[in-house]
Image (tube, rainbow, N blue to C red; front, top):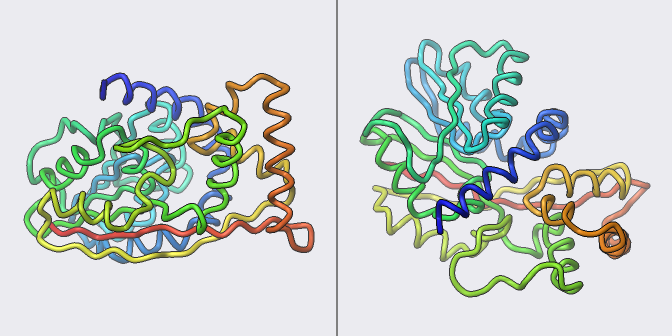
Length: 278
């Protein structure tokens, strides 16, 4: 079952890789507080090896790479097209101390104690087996090595995701999350659940705190394009009939009015950002 679920995740992100690359600058601008927190708490230094999992276009790792000096960044993603997007992005930025690999973070073909640091921004919440991925992160770290990660907090703090999710549920296009593990944008919003996953892996120490950012859009159309091209809800929305998509979009547009000022839509967002030491 996990293999089937992982394959669905791979296909979803394959379908969105070109959009993530096309919007790389706006994505980085909005989420820069998250990237900067992760790099700061990773504490990369000259000569170290750092692994980035679920890297997407790779920007968190690329912010860390210059601080590695003669060290090495390995930028990876489950989706081959995302790895290609990161490779193009790295070339664009002139980052030359980086290797690129397709890698399933839940079962890494990587030796024990191979890395001084691991980065995972917005990955664990979307994985069918985040416990396995966390255990793998610990395994590939050297003693004292650091995992830094970010996942989104709750629905009230992340209307960019909760507004469309609620509308999709209300309209019968998406089921309410059942008990147990259901991968999704807000799947690790419960701070206690997140801490339990970290504790079960047995890291030496952990620290988690909330970090804020803002998604800003020039129009409801710009937000709609973001939703269907760049988020985990996109494949579902794209699968709807034309009339159902139109109805969902109309409902979303109405709820975005509460976040519109001076013809700009500003949607607050919050992440749990954490560091876990091997």
